Image 1 (spheres, rainbow over the protein chains, first blue to last red):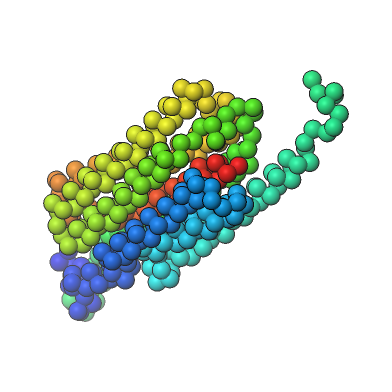
Image 2 (image 1 turned 90 degrees about the vertical axis):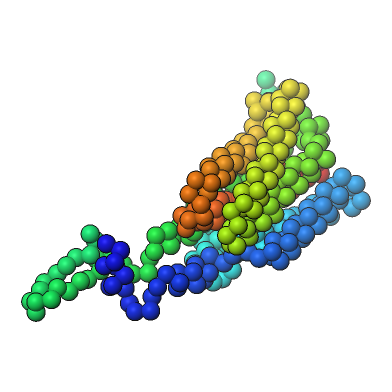
Length: 132
Length: 209
């Protein structure tokens, strides 16, 4: 069966070609990418923990800073560890990621927004004697 | 036989491939697995949203400041981060075809993953012992659901990792095993990405509330 397939395959296509094809489809990591990713992750993890544990900055500033660090670290992981780029799988990996991010943003902001207002408007009024 | 031998009007048979070209076995696995991970991402997004809504509802029960032990969470985070880099080293060993190195790095990754799970279970047990059970308040229900789902993913990742170690030992670095290791690589690093969200939004932001 395989001999038939080989005979029918276009000339010049042999098993050596498969390797190159794989490289284009799934980009692989290098020692450099993993090391850079790890060092950046350690820095981007240590600083938020230190900020919260020491309490050097005001609460509001700390909150914004640690969210910024988390977003930066997610980017580092995506690029250095998951090897995301525009070309992986002919761009479809990135498409799926972007589509998911849009859904995540809608679900997260929508839920938080609606439920925050619901909470605020459903707060018990001043007349606490009505409550059981 | 998938090849269809068709007419022979001129005597010699002509062969046509009934299958499509350029789709070698497992060629679309990486993309398919990535799309599965994206659907998993949606599950976590909803759990994060739930925690975001309910995370402040303590029902007069314990708050994050009473419960969370940040040095322990930092230790836990470092375990997961170290397991990420060791899995990276395992993938590098796989690319060079070094089975022994690959198995060693996979074992180290498994140990870090196990350490992560143990610390998490210790934390859960400690909280439940203090009466901070999932039934105590909406905050704790959503906390245990979110962090527990992540822990469950790590557990299944560990089972997968051990399975692949056995597979590589028995069958060697065949193409199918390389594909499976690449999928587990994505899964493992993805769990690390989710954990960034967990330690930032659940633990660190919880301490700031």
